[in-house]
Amino acid sequence: MTNSGPDQPAVPPVSGAKIRLAGKVVTLGGIIFGLSIVLFLIHDLVSERAQRRAGVVREIAAKWGAAQALTGPLLVLPYRDTVKLPPDKDGKVQEQVVTRLLHVLPEALTVAAAMRDSIRHIGIYEAVVYDADMTIRGSIAPPDLARIGIEPGDINWQDAYLAIGMTDLRGIRGKLALTLAGTALPLEPGARSRYSRTGMHEPLSGARALFGPGAAGSGRGSGGDAGGARTPVDFALDFTISGTGGLRIAPVGRKTEVEITSTWPHPQFTGGYLPTSREISADGFSARWLVNHVGRNYPQYWYGASDTNRNLEQAIHASRFGVTLYTPVDLYHKTERTVKYGTLFILLIFGTLFILELGLPLRISVVEYGLSGAALALFYLMVLSLAEVIGFGLAYGAASLIATVMVTAYLARTLGSRLLLLLVGGVQLGVYGYLYVVLQLADLALLAGTAGLVVTLAILMAVSRKIDWNRLDFISSTRGGSGNGGRPRDQGPKPAPSPAQAQAARSARGLDGGVLGQAAGSPAGPGGTPDASGKDQP
Image 1 (cartoon, one colour):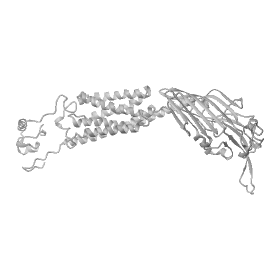
Image 2 (cartoon, rainbow, N blue to C red; image 1 turned 180 degrees about the vertical axis):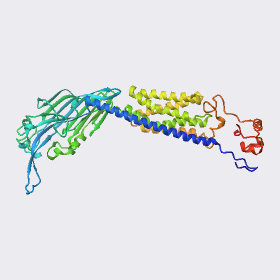
Image 3 (cartoon, rainbow, N blue to C red; image 1 turned 180 degrees about the horizontal axis):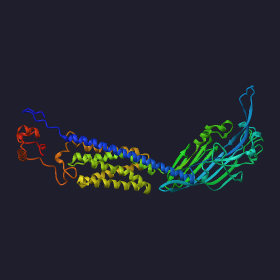
C-alpha cells in the first residue's frame, strides 16, 4: 500500500467484501440458470402429458364417435357426358362417353340439434362427449336441366340416390328415419360422393317420377324448362348421433337455418359463420344461424367438370359451421402457463432474500439459495402431478402451501425472526396467489400479468433506494460465524473496540507502532487509534 504524506489521509485497503459479493451474485446467477433448465424439462413433461391426454381423447372418440360434421341431404343424378379426346395419329377427333354426377342441393334446409353432454374417462384422463338429437327438415326442387345444359334423356334415373355426409357413422344411435315425399326410406351406409367420403345414401328407384320430366310441377315435360314451375319435394330425417368435442353443419340449402342447444356452459362457435343470435348461461347455451346460398363459395348445382374439382371440396369443408364443447383453460394449458412464469418467480424470491441480506445483518449461503430454489422448481411438478388427480385448483393450492412451508421452514434458523419468516412466506404466497388469478383470466391475462410486474418492479426500486450501493461491505469477516452462516441470532452487531482495548490488543500482538504495525493493520485514526471498522482485529 502506498504511504500517504503527513498531511494526507491514508487510503483504505480494498475490501474483499465486494469481491465476495460479486462472486455470490455470479453464483446465484448460475443457480438460477440451472433451475431454468429444470423448468424447461418440466415444461417438456407438461407437453408430453398433454399429448398423452390427446391420445386418450382420440381413443374415446374412436369408441364413442368423433367430432361430427353433417353435409346434406343431396340429390345425386348420374348422367352421360360426351368428352372429346385429342386427335389420333390420323388426325381424327375421338369422342368418349363418360358418366358424371349431378349434385342437386336443397332449396331449404332446417337443422335442430339438442346436445346432451357428458364426461368419459380412461384412467386419469377425460373427454367431453355428447349425444345430439338431430331433426332435419327441408326440400329439394327438380333440377332446371335446360339451364344446366343436360338433356333429360342423358340422366340415368334408375341409379339416382340421396346422399348424406357424416364424419363418423359409429356415432349413430337408434333408428334412422328418412321420409321423402311422405314415403319412409331406409338408409344404406356409404355416401357415394367424393364431397362426403363417409355417410349414408338411399337409392331412389322412383326419382324420375319425383324429379324428372313430367313430374308434378317440374315444368312443361322438359325437366324444368324456363317458365315452368319446379315444385320442391319435402324430406325429413330424424336420428340421434354421438360425438366428441364438436358438431358442425354444411350450409348446403339455398336457405339454411340451424339451431343448436346444449347443457354445456362453455361453447366455442367455430367454422365459416358465427351465429346470428345466441344465449349462454351457466345452464347451457342456444345458438341460431341463418345462411343464404349467395354467402357461400359453391353453387346450387355441381355437375360437369366441377364434379372433380378439388377446390369445390375445400369450399364445402370451409363453409361448415357449428360449436365445440370445450374447457376454457384445461389443466395442462394452465400448468404450461404456470411454468412459463417459473424463472421470474424464482428471481422474485431470490431478490427478496438478497435485499434482506443487504439491509440486515444476516447471511444466507449459496447452498440455502440452491435448495430453496429447488423447492420453488418442485412446486410446478407438484401442480402437474396433483392436478391430474384432484383438479387444478386444489392441486395449485396444495402445492403453494407445501412449497412455502418447505422454503420458510428451511430458512427459519438463518432468518432467525418470525417477522422475516412471515415476510418471505407472505411474498411467496402472494406471488402464487397472484399467478392463480392471472391464470383464471382469459382475455385480460396479459394486462393483469403486466400490471403485476410493474407494481413488483416499483416496489423493488423503492426498497433498493435505501441501499448504499457504493458500500456493499455487509459480507464481512467480523460477521462470520458457524452454524447459520452469519452472526448468532441472539447477538447484535459487534461494537467497535474502545481506544484502550485496541491499544492493549496491539501491544499483546507486538504490533504497537513501527512499520510492521502499519503494514499489518488498518490505517490508524488520530493518536494511533484504529478506525471503527476494526479491520486490524483477529
